[in-house]
Image (tube, rainbow, N blue to C red; front, side, top):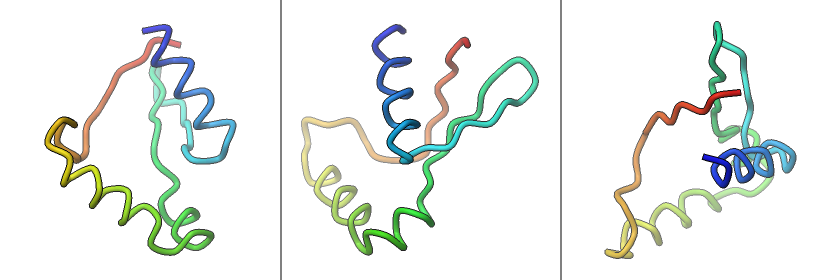
Length: 68
């Protein structure tokens, strides 16, 4: 849990994700539109590479609940 919180904070600080308070939880989303404008094709190539690596978990939408 600590490791996940650390990495989510680093992604937020780098501007890769956006965090929004929803009740007592936080919704963390990828800033895909902003990243695609600044780095066209980067996320698509990273996802394609991850899809081809059988040692990684499946790429897709997932929800992770982190206590604040």
